[in-house]
Length: 570
Image (cartoon, rainbow, N blue to C red; front, side, top):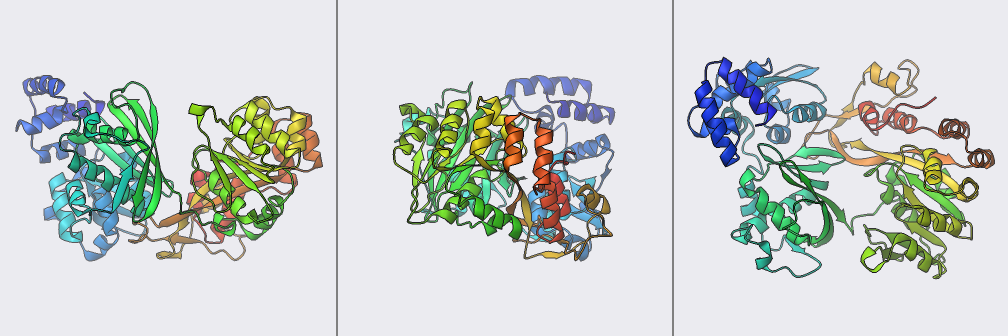
């Protein structure tokens, strides 16, 4: 029994709604059926859903309301966009300039409450109402949701919308009986992929929880919960995805990786699939890669004019190594692709080694790593150097062998681009030293170290002038009284941005151009703090400083910059 169920049962018992005997019987039955204790009590008719809602309200110290008895004004309804209300299953009751009070059925869903506050850019106060009443109110005030149920999505999907294939042929018998009547499950899985693609999601998360099977789409770096498949379909959906991505469906104890190829609306989409065993079943994450969708120039990445000019000069150097650093999902690969597009001329031969090849680039030789035949980063890099390239791009430096070959290539007349997983630009030196590269080689080869993060753009359709909190400005290192020509903006939320006020992302950058003094410091193995101080002296802006400039220019919000950056080191 989950801790949440346990606390709720205690509250229901204290309210006198459930007796100790009824509770004990339900616990025994729930243990054998796998259903939650509270759900079992509802099924047996011991509890009504309204009583559960009242208990949740008491548990969290929130007011219980009966929505049917409330008079909700039109301006209150309009304070929460239709898409947001349906997404988070909330009905607004009251609002003012700073806050909105909403009715929801589960006050324990703190992630949803936080996301709702972000979407509305207001403080969210919670009242509790019965789930059925909320559904009725949503239909009354907003109309039926476009994706009211998974079954409706299945019915709506048309033949030819999506074609899914795997690298090999899969027979129906391979399903192992996990999916009875394949077609509905196939349509369900296809619908997930189609809807995620249409909404601009980068990832699909399918997570088995104690009481439900949760589905979320990551859009512009933030997870949004969607209408999830019923819990009873969990095993069938996961089995179907494992078959499509050529995983072993019988193996449920170890993590697995696979790939799916899809054609959505005539576009070729690759899905990288990761399967991870968890307490309540296997969690699936799918990364969507539109191989034809990358059309970015350097200006579109988010560079301001001065940084862009600096970077354009660097990427046209004849040799040396340029490293882009940042955590997973910070846009490093996209930046490298944009660099290659910028310098891709008939007089230059460009070869890349990637795992996987995420986007197809015209006029560039791209090599896919294949460990099954020993085509590793290092082996591919050795072979490609015999192809006499001018420019080499490595998807990632992961070990000493790859790093050593890359740096030697940069010292012998090649321009090398690659990525590292570090928090800031100067830390790349420490990372290379840690994997065994000699400091004098790092100093000789490195031309530029650049760290980046992605922040959400303000939605252009619903943007409006805004006044950020002084505390946020001070956290960004800005004096509210000394900002010249501020143009602070924020999104109000609309259908285009799904009520979030944000649409799309761009980069924050710290660009460390390595000069002679910096090279001496690298050879002498100074601390990262000292190297960072030197980087500031030669003109490097930190991620937060770059974000502050862009917030003042109205490209994003101060709160968004604070969300993705850490405080600067002295």
